[in-house]
Image 1 (cartoon, rainbow, N blue to C red):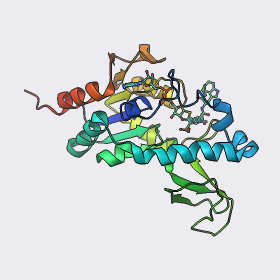
Image 2 (cartoon, protein in one colour):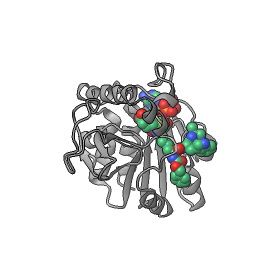
Image 3 (spheres, helix red, strand yellow):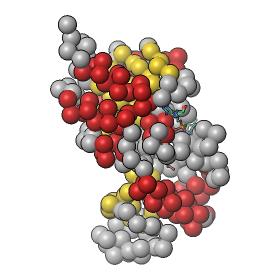
Amino acid sequence: MTDIRNIVVLTGAGISAESGLATFRGPDGLWEGHRVEDVATPEAFARDPVLVHRFYDARRANLKTVAPNQAHAALARLDAAWPGDLLIVTQNVDDLHERAGATRVLHMHGELRSAWCRGCDARSRWEADLGHHPLCPRCGTGGGLRPDIVWFGEMPYEMDRIDRALMDADLFVSIGTSGNVYPAAGFVQTARYVGARTLEMNLEPSLGSTHFHESRIGNAGALVPAWVDEILAPTP
Ligand code: BJW
C-alpha cells in the first residue's frame, strides 16, 4: 500500500451496532419508537423539549453500559500506527472511538457527552441528564443547555476541515453507514472526484454503494480488523 498516505475514514451507526447500540434505520432502529421528526430537528425541540431531552438523556445514560468493539479497536490501532494523515470522521454521537484509544476523531454530528448553551454558545462536557434544566457551567444561565447534537437542517461540525481532508485523500473508507444522510453520504463522490481509492464496509450495500471501487459486505467487527491488518502489513 505504498501509494496510500492520506486516509479519511467515515463511520456510522453500524460500527457501534456490535457494541449494543441501535442503528437508526434498521428493524430495531432508534427511531422505531420515536418519529425522527419528533426528536431530531430544532423545531421538534422547541415544540416538545421534554420528549427530546428524555430521548437523549436515556441514550447518554446508556453509554455507560456499552464498550468499544473489535472495529473501534482496529481503527485505534490504525490511528496509532499510521504514519500519514488520518481523519476518522464519525457521524456517531457515542464516544466509542475515543474509548478504544483513537485520537484523530472528528464528530460531525455532535456528541452525547457534550451540552451546548444557547445563551453563551459554550460547549461543555456533560455526563448527567439535561432534562431538569441545569445551569450552564460557563455563564450560569438556566434552561439554555441543549444536547450538542446536529439535527436535521443544522450545519454539521467542521465541514471545512473534512473537505480539506477529503481533497487530500488517497483512500476513503466508509464503515457502517446507510448513506441516507447528507453531507456525509456525498463524501464518496468528493473522494472519487479527487482520485482517491474508495472502499465501503457494511452489513449490506449502502445507498451509495455503486460509487465505491470496492464493497465488503459483513460485520464491521470482522471486516475492519482484517482491513487494518492488510493496510498495516509491510509491502513486499
Ligand atoms: C452494520 C452493522 C455491523 C448494521 N457492521 N454494518 C434532500 C437531498 C439531500 C439532502 C437533504 C435533502 N433534504 C434535506 C437534506 C439535508 C439533510 C439530509 O441528509 N436529509 C436526508 C434524510 C435526505 N441533512 C441535514 O440536514 C444535515 N445538515 C445539512 O445538510 O446542513 C446543510 C449543509 C449544506 C452543505 C454542506 C454541509 C451542510 C444534518 C444532518 C444531521 C443528521 N443527524 C442525525 C441525528 C443525530 C442525533 C442522534 O443521534 O439522534 O445523525 S440523523 C442520523 O442519521 C444520525 C446519523 O449520524 C445519521 C446517519 O445514520 P447512519 O450512521 O448511516 O445509520 P443508519 O442506521 O442509517 O445505517 C447504519 C448502517 O449500518 C446500515 O446500512 C446497516 O446495514 C449497517 N450495519 N450493523 C457493519 N455490525
